[in-house]
Length: 340
Image (tube, rainbow, N blue to C red; front, side, top):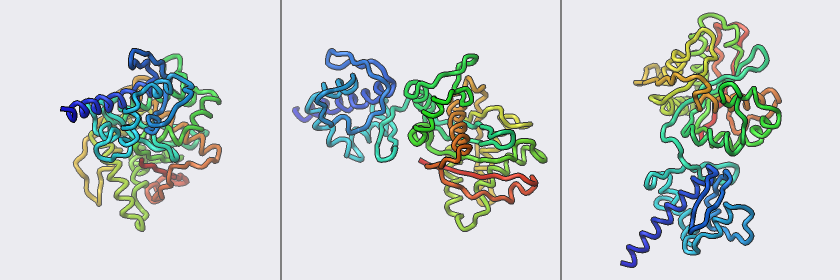
């Protein structure tokens, strides 16, 4: 009987653990033991629950300091238990409460899952009048990513349609995003493909072919890395296939739904044949689409880094097959990727 009661108590603590992570991330009010805590948007480190807090500086730390000593003792063990601990339960979905675990530098953060559906956001950002940065953002949880932009970074929205637009942000907000980019990326995406090119401005020939060749050029032509190329392409295909894809209307003479189809179709081509694929185009304008707005911020950030000659870490250069745009004389392309 004592064992059953103890188990029930531990289950209740697991729920409390996950509930605090969610409330802290959202910056919600949280009630515990007849007290109300006004939490500010906070990224939770799993070790916060076991730290000794003598002089709590805000309501988040006051809440942690108020937790039962038995809870804290158990937390010291649970955060290390890989398969059955509280974090493991949250990763699987414990009583409907799910979390993601991301890494930034040497720190680990626990992020609540706010939307269960993955998505892809496609957007571009221009460098001068000739070059464009195309961002293909594979987004595991658009609601959580949007919440970080809205509540943690406090980014302002445009007045006309109330959306996030990189080009409309002032210097201070852009600097804040640049400063937090290495955290923003794993928080928003589980993969990213970037193409920097001048081939889509005043395109030569049929733009549909240019768009397809830009994607193919990221995954062909460097035979010494066949296994790496094939694995990367397959991973991105799995993340994009049968997943809602939001694409801003940035491509000349190419409807967004066609761009989405070409993107998934090109990723589906493996060793000369096509895997069965299902492109899902989300017919939303940018102000209606959170994935497009997230992609806009990421594309704008990377474009600015390129303009300022900053390192693109943690992005990895991806050798581009120049033969794929040989039909576009004088045009060039570079590619980069990142996988969580």
